[in-house]
Image (cartoon, rainbow, N blue to C red; front, side, top):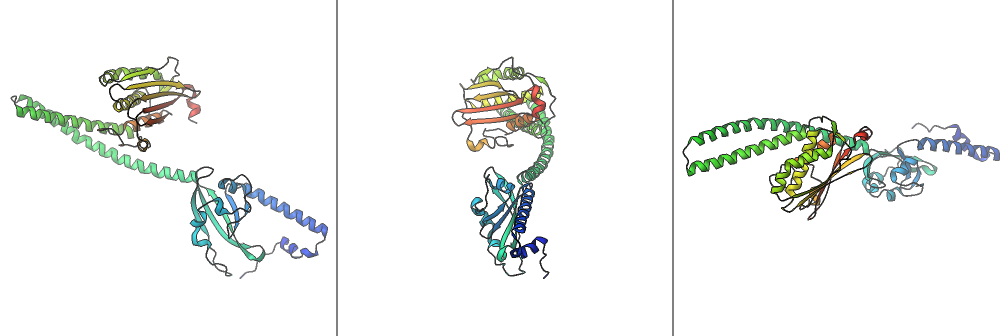
Length: 392
C-alpha cells in the first residue's frame, strides 16, 4: 500500500519534544490560525458538515449543520442520534458492520429524511467513514443538504405534468362527447315534432314525458362538459378597472327570483368607497354566481346569506357567509378537487372554477366552515393600486 503523505506540519509535530517555549508558542498560534481559517471556510458553506464518532457523538459541526438540526448553540459533545431521533435506525446495519480490518471497504451512506423542527423540511445525508487521530479511531464525516425546495419543485413539476396529461386527455374526451350529444339533441327534437302530430292519448303523453326527461339529461350532460372545459381551459382575463360592488349587485339582481323561491334572505353590506380592482367583469360574475349558488343550495328555506366587505393596504375582501349545514372537516381539504361534491346532482367543478379565476386575477379564495352553523367563503383581490407590488 502507498505510504501516507507527510506535511511540513507533520514533521514539526514529529519532533514536538525538541521544541523550546518560543517555537512551541509559535506552533500553537499557527495551529490556531489554521483552525480558524478552516472553520471560516466551513461556515461559509450552505451544506451542514459534521464529524461524529462511532457512537454518534459530535466532534465538530459547522453553522449550517446547527441550523439544519435546529440548534443555535454549539452541539459539540451531543449525540447526533438524540438530536435527530430515528436517524440511527434508518442507517441500519451500515453502522454496525465490522470494517476494522486494514484495507477493508468502509461503507458510504446516503439517505433522505424528514425533519419536523424547527420547520418541516427534507434533508439529504451523505456520510463517509474515515480513520484518524490517535489509535486510528473510526469517525464519520456527515454532509447535510436541505433539499426541501428541490424536492417540492420536482414533485410539483411531476404533478403538473401528470395533471396536464390528464386534463389534455379529458378535454379530448369531453370534446368527443359533444358530438353524440348534439346528435341526440337533434333527433330528440325530430321525435318531439313527430309526436306533436300524433293524436293525444295516454301513450303519447307517456312518450312525451320520457322525451322531456331525455332532453333534460342531455342538457345536464352538456352543462357538465361546458363547465369542465371552462375549468381546465380558462380564458385569459380581460382586465379592466372594475367595481366589485357593481358586479355583485348585478349578480344578486339576476338571482333574486331564485333566492325568493328558496325563501333565502340576503344581507349585503357594501360601500361605494370600496377600492376598485383590475378584473374581467364576466369572469367575476361567474365567481359570484358560483359562490352564491353553492350557498343557496346549502340552506333550507329561512336561511340567510350575509355578504360583507373589508379592505387593508393591499387587498379587497368579499365574505359570503351562509347559515347552511356546514361542511365536514374531511371534505374541506377536497373542496377544490374536480368532481368532489357533497351535493346530489352536483358536478364538483364550481369551486375549482372559482379558484382558477381568482388565481388568474392574482387573488385567493378561502373557506371556513362548521357543521350545523354554516360556511364563510372569503374572496381576496389585490387592490388596483397595489397589484404590481403583490405579483412580484
